[in-house]
Length: 312
Image 1 (cartoon, rainbow, N blue to C red):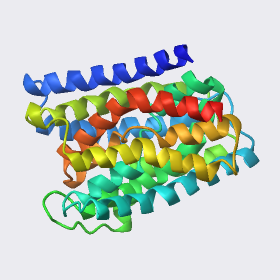
Image 2 (spheres, rainbow, N blue to C red):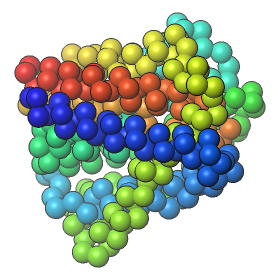
Image 3 (cartoon, rainbow, N blue to C red):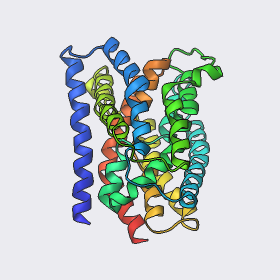
Image 4 (cartoon, rainbow, N blue to C red):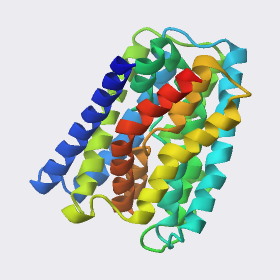
């Protein structure tokens, strides 16, 4: 168990390092707001779609259709719980207009890919990463549609952006639909194409973390840690929600599959939220703060929740 904790801690420290580089780059003028926006566009248009496709095309095996259906069902149920929790918490905390969308995004969408894959591999073994690949089909479908709408419809400028179906025809959504079709058709481990997409997609994680760090540099040092309301929301995201998921899912799944679902529910805020803020005018500063705080909390909460799930 100590080795698991050490491995997870190392993953979190690596994330902090990348965020720190982004912070320094903004402070020293290497990165600026225009660069952040362009880099966000590159990730959303090219590297992230490649990563989504590589999640299926570059894996050695996929679960059988029955197990795959069970995993997707558990993922759908998870988000059916995340969404009302997000609305209840923002109501109770009286989050003002212009930030509700950001708070709701943070409470619903965790970093189930960039952080989730290596953490699951460290805790439950590399064979469980494929569970997260299937689980993330639902995440991708929701985050690039409903998640984008949350940010666009309640941005920091108070402008309610109207989105049509054309706004959802994006490279990420197309890649998600293609991934789902490929997974259910059993297509995986495609030579040349899979590794090529994986190589392109590997740029996504460092790029998004640099953007998060750069966004944090826009804040005075005293405000990096956010407000009490933000901390309460982050604790709900990192502790209360995963425990609720455990209680609901325990009768429906067991063993490594239950552990995977619980740990994925405990991931820090999804880094694509910051990129959505740049694209749709959302409050990137609050999103970056939430990403930073939840990553700090993850140093302790993920190892503890993983141990809890493994023991029970």
